[in-house]
Image 1 (tube, chains in turn green, cyan):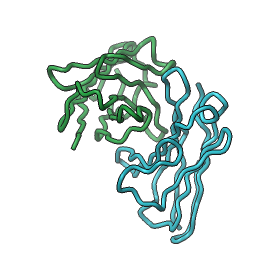
Image 2 (cartoon, one colour; image 1 turned 45 degrees about the vertical axis):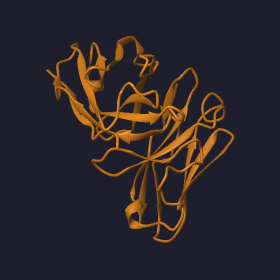
Image 3 (cartoon, one colour; image 1 turned 180 degrees about the vertical axis):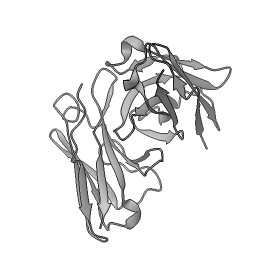
Image 4 (cartoon, helix red, strand yellow; image 1 turned 135 degrees about the horizontal axis):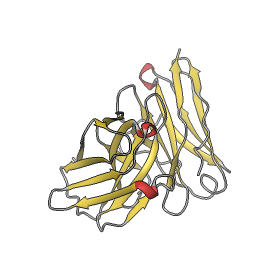
Length: 121
Length: 110
């Protein structure tokens, strides 16, 4: 059974770069069967799609975050990563990584537990 | 790309049925049969309940069903149970390989 686990700093200073990793277990990140995604949720607010990546490295980004966002895959470590530059307090949120089947890339059926990231000096 | 519109809250008594609406535009919900629904309990990760408008993941209760008409998708929960109390989010494909979520609906089981 596929499992996902987010990791990374819980506190980031304004204007700096937020970097998170999602480690995949129970399956290969190189599999063509999955898309890998990031979703975030500010405290007390709703879900926001950040972006997806396919095993080939093809990425799909939210238009509102595209200019600051990089999602990448590291097949040697079986993980994928998120990098968000020039963060502000508005980027404070629980960040989830998730996976979807390649035949239903919009439906995230496996989720990590989420990791809280606070942007503050 | 604006968030899909959901009612802030709905409520129902055990055994009853409730419906949560999710209104988008002709650029997202109205154009694609790619609407999914997620259930989220407090402090937990979301759980996929419905995908491609009306399909249920394997093993999910048939008390949950989805539909779509025009720019509005709907999630119906029948035979309401206490454990259904949670936040529910819709999500739609919005073209150009992007997704958009709704603002979320808090379901209270009275």
